[in-house]
Image (tube, rainbow, N blue to C red):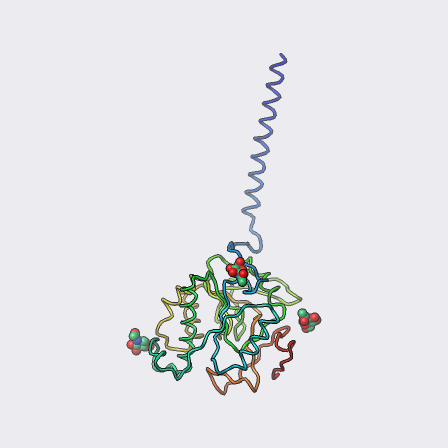
Length: 283
Ligand SMILES: *[C@@H]1O[C@H](CO)[C@@H](O)[C@H](O)[C@H]1NC(C)=O
Ligand SMILES: *[C@@H]1O[C@H](CO)[C@@H](O)[C@H](O)[C@H]1NC(C)=O
Ligand SMILES: *[C@@H]1O[C@H](CO)[C@@H](O)[C@H](O)[C@H]1NC(C)=O
């Protein structure tokens, strides 16, 4: 009698465990299938607060004779505590080097040199086996709170991203939104790219760099427009931030090397790093 009673207790205990497990499983399943607004799908390590902004490496393409720009970038790097690796841009008069790259004759030597400089940077990313790299041109300015902004969107980066524009010259967004929230009172969006003009600040993943080496050969228009074509035709998977957290720095004493004479529209950051360290822009 006593034994039977104990057996029954054990049985009830076991049934309770099974029931609890089943309930937990069902609950988890429903939590799992309930769509959240945004899903965390990026599972690579990423640390926006470190000296490479969470990427593996930061390159800055710089024409050696533009030491004025190198000085500004160095000030930005110091302010944000960043390691920025300067690489020499290819000069448009360097015909010998430019011969190694393909382009339609309608592409001007300056635009071809710009393209070749970017292409060579992808080669560096791949040969160094960097999982990701931020590629900067040298006429740029950083949002003061850039690390906070990046840290917020980083978990929402799709795992298979290939390009990631931290800044562009327009308003670039699409209907595919990965994050939309208020940051420092500003609407902040991470979306699939649509038409990100300019190439002053974008990251590539290793996969992205490998892909670009294959598909960005023999261009027939300036590199930023050639990239937009690849994005439109889904040959490369690119994301954009809106607003930009890295913008082009334009001032009258800072002419463009690629398109001399163009002043361009100014895309102001919320808080400019260069202004904070004492530079003045035209407005
Ligand atoms: C910054 O973080 C990324 C992601 O964890 C890492 O790959 C990179 O090496 C880090 N940079 C430095 C300088 O430690
Ligand atoms: C590159 O493209 C142009 C047309 O845009 C073409 O005329 C030229 O033959 C191409 N070069 C190579 C090597 O494919
Ligand atoms: C950024 O600018 C806003 C005003 O637009 C100011 O209130 C804020 O303190 C600035 N933040 C930093 C870090 O400078």
